[in-house]
Amino acid sequence: MGELYLVGMGPGDLGGLTLRARAVLEEAEVVIGYSTYIRLLEEMGLLEGKEVVRKGMTEELDRAEEALERALEGARVALVSGGDPGVYGMAAPVLELMEERGFERRDGGVGLPGRFAIGNREVRLEVVPGVTAANAVASLLGSPLAHDTCLISLSDLLTPWALIERRLKAAGEGDFVVVLYNPQSKRRHWQLARAAEILLAYRPKDTPAALVKSAYRARQEVTLTTLEGLLQAEAGMLTTVVVGNRQSRAYAGTFLTPRGYALKYDLETGEPLPGETPGLSLRREDA
Image: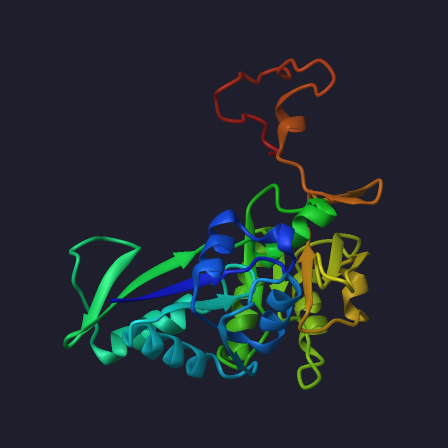
């Protein structure tokens, strides 16, 4: 029985790999991935003696198909994703392909790891989590995601732009901190500014925002700006954008989204504010 591991490689540096991800990559016989991710793994020294298959950016289905086929042939295969394979990664294409082809579960279990088969061929499937781009970016900024957050990709290659706009408006109305993946590319140059315009209808123009390019890689760039500043900002596919909620603020070069303790406690003494009780719901009307 072959083995297929969908591996999250984190932001792209050795320190950002989980112990499980590193162990799986070291044990893999075949490693398949987008060419940039393969190059990063080579720089980490994790691909020596392995068969390596490089694919282009728009070849996700090809990656999924080849990884699945090689595992069905009996190989131990690692299919890598940047960040986490379940967040804009390769987990969904692989499972969709298996569903479409009629794979059946053979171990009677729930969730993963699990054994799946088609005909007399069987594969063990495991998803190995990784540090997401949102998590990596947040660690460089401070605490931008300390309260309710949503992730939205601005790429309309697989999602209609009208639906992306609806999601941006819902995030604005709900006062979520917003993490924007795939904000711009050479072909898609206007979506980031349009996203900023939409969010400006729901929060102040001086709401803190940030652009982080190539987090934890050699050409890392961290830029603090405002929601209004995103109207003129330049970004790319290696950039992740964060927009704060109405309580977010800049503090000493960091991006702070408060948890809300200041609404309930005196932060200097730790005592509850008048009318508040530890362990009970917040009572203040302006919460």
